[in-house]
Structure formats: structure tokens, C-alpha cells
Image 1 (cartoon, helix red, strand yellow):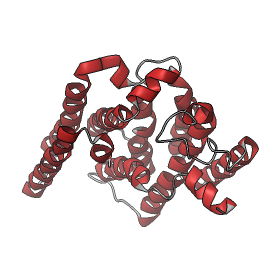
Image 2 (cartoon, rainbow, N blue to C red):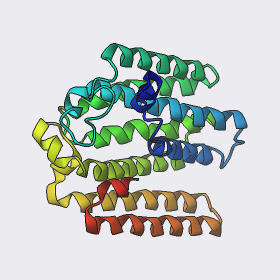
Image 3 (tube, rainbow, N blue to C red):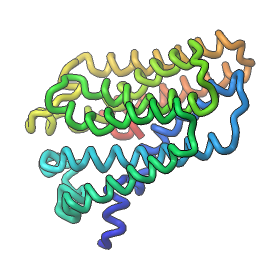
Image 4 (cartoon, rainbow, N blue to C red):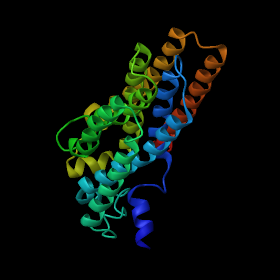
Length: 262
């Protein structure tokens, strides 16, 4: 396998689902800002490029932090760092390169966006470490990657209305929910190697916990629609999301947690 392909795998660019999971909340933040402001093409491009670069940064620093653990987890043992296809020095160099790209992108954003982004950057680096001492690292992930909505909003407006905070808390719930399902696939391995996750914290109540959080996210979207007098089309959109929710829950019958996540 070529070096280039290994770097692609390290950044998970071959698995774009993670990009969507950061991009969608960011686009929602942009749309909420657009309720009372004009959304420019420039802002949209920054959100898309930022989501790709930041998600890649998160994956690289996560693998740097976890490569010793990843060796013992069935799902992650073949990751480039875990299997030795890339060295730590190469991974750090790649992380620095991606970070430079992120900083260059920030040049084209307002000061408020730069300030928020730099604070969030600290959490991106710290998140992988929380698995070792914080019983609900999924919450830190939610706070961190959910911030994409706030960052995207700040590109268009510095007047932070209640709707964006409702969205942010809803997105945090959604991220904790989907990452809890994701973590269920690794529950036994996580317990063996001694790292924390919400499934280990909530035990046999984990599924119920994840469902409630997921539905709270939909509730937050509905509340935003109500506050801002959205059209009937928005109600149809919510109904489509609820149908998707029930499709996801069908995978529970076979304990197909990764399929729920996907």
C-alpha cells in the first residue's frame, strides 16, 4: 500500500461518513444564521472545506493518542498507526500540515470565528485523552464537533440568537447518541483495555439513553422551526427524519450498531 493511501486512511478520507457528521451540523448552523442574514457562497465553501480539514485533524490526533489501544481492538487494529504502516513522526507531520491548512482557512473568516475556532481546536486535541479519565467522552465529542454549528453561524452573524443555542444543545445530544451506538460495537474491547465510554457508564440502559438523546435532537429542530415560523415543508422534513430514526432502530434487533451509526 502506498504512503499516500495510508495518509488518506489515517485522515479517514476513505470513509466520508464522518465528514457528513461534522458537515451537517455546520450547515445547520449556517442555515440558522441565514434566517435573518444573507448566506454567501464564500461562507458555504469555508464550511465545507473546514469540515473536511477539521474532521481529518480530529482523526489523525485521535489515532496518535490511541494507537497503542487500537492494536487490541478488532475494528481498529488495521489502522495505519496501529499496524505500523505509518510512524508517529509521519502522523504528527501530517497533523501539523492539516493544522496549517485550517489556519490558512481562518484568514478568510471574521475575528469572532477565529476566536471560537481556536478554543474549539484545544478540545479537538484533548478529546482523545478524555477516554482515559472521563466516563462520558462522547459528551466531550459532542461539545467539540457540535461547535461546528456555532462556528458556521459566526461566519454570517455575530448576533447569537436563542435558535443557535437550541441547535447546539440538540446537536450535542445527537452526537452523543450516534457515538454511543458506535461505541457499543467496541464495548467489550474498551472494557478490556480500560478506556471509558457511555455504554460502559450506562450499562443496560445505554440503548434507552441513546434513543432519548436522538429524539431530543429532533425536538430541538422542531422548536427552532416553531420559534421562527418555518413553513409546512419543514414539518415534512421532520417527518422524514423520524422515519429514518425508525429505520435505524430496526438494526437494534440484530445488534448491528455500526449500521445504526452509518
